[in-house]
Image (cartoon, rainbow, N blue to C red; front, top):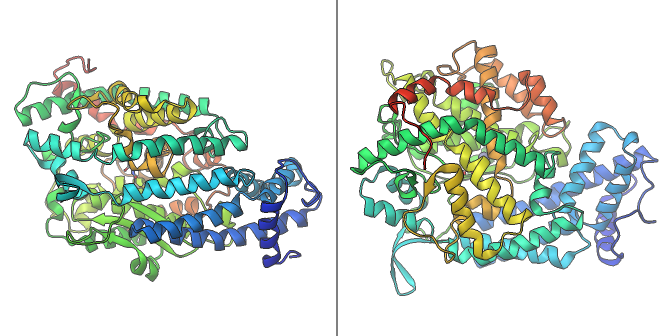
Length: 609
Ligand code: X8Z
Ligand code: ZN
C-alpha cells in the first residue's frame, strides 16, 4: 500500500476543507481506473478508515440512545460530524466517481464497493458542509426528544404525576376492555407528536437538500437508490403488493371489527377505530384469537430466558454462540420504574465496529411479542456476525439489500411460532395442541397480512409524499389519516387536527427515514425463504414445521448471510429460491384462511365503507 493511513486521513480532511467544490475529476484524484493498484489502494484506505471512524460514531450513537443525556447527545453530534466529513469528503466523492467512470476496468466487487461509497457520500456531501452539519444537529436533537420522551397519563404543572412506559401502553391496548382507558392510552401514545412536528419539517428540508447535492430528486429517492430501483419502480412494487394482499386484508378487517365489537359490546363499525386495536398504529391486530393466545406460555419465564432462548435457536442451526461482549454490552431489558435513565424503547440491533462488537437494544418483558422480537433482533445480529469475514470488505458488510436484513430475523419469527418448536423447548406441554387454522389466523392478524397495508401503503406513501412532494407541514396529519383510512380502513377516535403529528410517533419516521418499505419487502422475502426451507429442505408442511436443530437449514441461511452485500440481491433470491421477489409465497401460505374467513364473515362484502 503506497498511501499510509495517517497520510490518507490528512488528504481526505484537507481536501474536504480547502478545495473548491467539484464533482468532476481534479489533479489530486487518481486517473480514472487506469491503474488497478490505485483502485485497490483507495478501497483499502476507505475500508480501514470507515471501520475506525464508523466505530467511534456508532459507539457515540449507542450511548446517546441507551442513556439520553445532553452530554451523550453532544458527543454523538460531534462523532457523527467527523464520520460524515470522512464519508462525504470531496476527495472520496471525486475519486470514487472517477473510478466508476471506468466501470469496465473494475471487478464486480470493486464496482459494488465504489457504488456503496458514493451512496454513503450522498448522505453527507462535503461540498455543503454547513447543511450536512445542520442535518446532523437536527437529527441528534430530534432523537433525543423521542428517546427521552415520557408518556404521561396525568400532569401536575410541567411535571408528570403519572408516567407510563411504552410497554404499559402496549399491554393496555392489548388487554383492556375499558373503552375510556383504551382511548386515553391511545391518545397518550401520540403525545410526542406535537413536539416533533416542526423538527420533522425542518429535517425533511435538510435531508432533501443533502440528497439533491448528488443529483437525487429527494431523500426518498436516495434511499430507494440503494435497491438499484427508481422511485416509480418502488412505488409500483409497493402498490402491487398492497393490492395483492387487499382481498385477504379486507376479510381480516371485517373479522377483526366484528370480533372486537362483540368484545366491547358495541355495534360492528364500518371502519376500524384506532383505539380498538392492540397496536399503537394498527400495524397489527394482535390478541384477537383466544384459541391461539401464546402469552400464557411465558407467564413463568424470566426476560433473560427469552433472549437466551432466541440465541439457542440460532446455535441449534449450527451458528456460533454470541460473543461474550454481546451479553456484556447489550441493553436488553425494561428499565426499573424508578430508573433515572432514559432509553429508546423500540427494539434495535447494532454493529458497532463492523466486526464482532454486536449489540441489541430492547426492553424485554416476558410475553410473546418480546419472544418474537428477540428472535427478530438476533437475526440482525447473526447477519452482522456472518458477513464480518475476510471475504466481505467493510463497506459491503450490509444485507444483500436492507430488506434482506429485516427478513432474516422475521423468518426466524415465523419459525418461532411453529408448534413443534414451542413443544420442543418445553413452552407447550407435550400433549398440548393449538388449532392450526387459529394459529394461522393469529399470524395473519398479528405479524403478516395486517402489516402490509401499513408498510406498503400508509408508511411508504406518507414518506414518499413527505420527501418527493414536499408535503406542507399543515397537511401532515390530514395526509397521514387519509392514507390510514385508504389503506388500513382505520380511523381515529376523535378529530386529529394539525396540532398533532401522529406520523411523528412512529420511530422509523424520525430515525430511519424513508426506508419503511424495507419491511414490506422483507415480509415478501421471508415467506419466500420459509416456503423454500419448509418444502425443499425440511420437506414439511410450511404451517407445521420445525427448523430447530436443523444444520442443513442453518448452512443454507448462513450461506446467504455470509455474503453480505457482495452479490446482486435479485440474483441471490433467484439462486436461493428459484423465483423472483413476489407475494406468491405469502399468499399461498395464508390461502387456507380464505375459505375460513368467508365462512366466519357469513359471506358479507368485506370491504369497509
Ligand atoms: O422496527 C422493527 C424491528 C426493529 S428493526 C423491531 N420492526 C418494524 C416495526 O416495529 O414497526 C419489525 C417489523 C416492523
Ligand atoms: Zn429489524
